Length: 412
Ligand SMILES: C[S@@+](CC[C@H](N)C(=O)[O-])C[C@H]1O[C@@H](n2cnc3c(N)ncnc32)[C@H](O)[C@@H]1O
Image 1 (cartoon, helix red, strand yellow):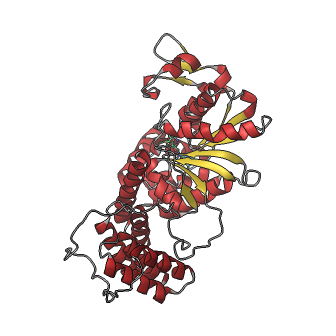
Image 2 (tube, helix red, strand yellow):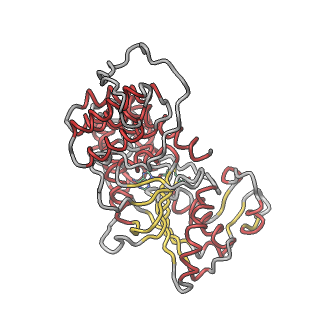
């Protein structure tokens, strides 16, 4: 990483490529009539850093982006207000880019009949230019990409030149501020927010920064609150103490606060995902899959063998008791009856991970996804392993695949 890349990484958390950083530095050097890049970096001031950051952020956003998140939020807050009509909901939108997301939140809640006294949206972005644009509340056609544009008639006034300004009743529901998520001062805000929107930011972070960002978000969110992420970001949240909600296409999550009663299935660094029943597999030969790990030796099939499902349940129970050997034996007995059981391989992977055998764990999870390509949890575990092995591109590909599966499962 070049010194300029690491400087910008430190300031923003963004995982920026060399060409992007070089382009931004060149632009600012020209602006400041500086010809030596080292001198430019040495003379860096806070104001200059802000100007540089503006050139590397991606402030892409639009009203009603991934609209199901707003539907889910509205459904989440209604019963809370029904239970206490005096309550004032606290909502955070970070990063807010040019304000499209927090204004959408305010419009959706207003349209749902929620009185203005019952909610407030805090909206932050690292970019002062974005925050200034958001405060102005004026938008061109790029911000209006939603299919249904009725909201624009309700909540905007046209200036006659193609731009639209958000009406004041919506504007006063949102408080904008410039801020860096990674430096968010938690002193007065721990557990403060009922709802947090953090969408399309973590995709630009590397693994340690993602972890740090999620820790901040977790601290900001009330224990019974909900967080909405970008669809590709769900697996990262699942790896760090969140569990996905079932609302289709909303990419909502909640904190996993329950005590870890099932340590084997929820190791500290493993993705916490909602366990879904595994659909039965279509008949498929696994006789000799190329480049796959060897099958565990099958146990002799006893005429009195317990039903396969019971064996897996028993394997999980034994695993919870940390009886890894017995749990493994049950998985193998299960495989003797159902050689194509992806779930058995998944559990074997977890057991081997617990046993500090990451390579074996990886082999089992690979076999699992060979048998069941949409096994979300196995993909998440493989992504984490790839990250642990510094295989950033492999991890990214696995996460993207897991995210697509998550999205598909949500849709169906
Ligand atoms: C792609 S936009 C996402 C906006 C909105 N949440 C959405 O999904 O439409 C990403 C934004 O993240 C902001 N950003 C980048 N790093 C940040 C950080 N460390 N803290 C807060 N905002 C950051 C950028 O300025 C940019 O406006």
